[in-house]
Image 1 (cartoon, one colour):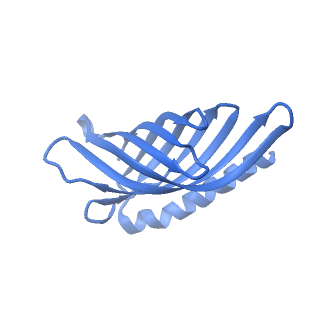
Image 2 (cartoon, one colour; image 1 turned 60 degrees about the horizontal axis):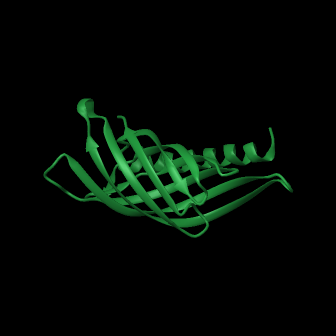
Length: 161
């Protein structure tokens, strides 16, 4: 196994170890896939998120991990998101918050071979969530990155119980 994959496995294991106690504390409410696109780097993004419940009224802890492919870069990001879900009387719930993002980038540079970098940044997050038939929740989300993380991510996702 090369160094890139060892780093990814270690980061994923540490992330899951950190999410476990938080899930027990706040009340695990579900998990689900997410897909979308990012800008700088321009990538297709796939990942998974965890709804760890509310730790204050209408304030949810929802970490995620994403993998980005494209633009001659492989990206692995771990995101620790906290968002306020606005109480509404309709079927769509808007939310806004922020997240800390730790990102690992592996660059495919034809002149110099592979190169990698690890960065930490912040992102503002906003979106909507709605409950579908059967209890599955659907989300559409916009993330605006600050620092050396993707500038913009547009994502959709589903949360299963």
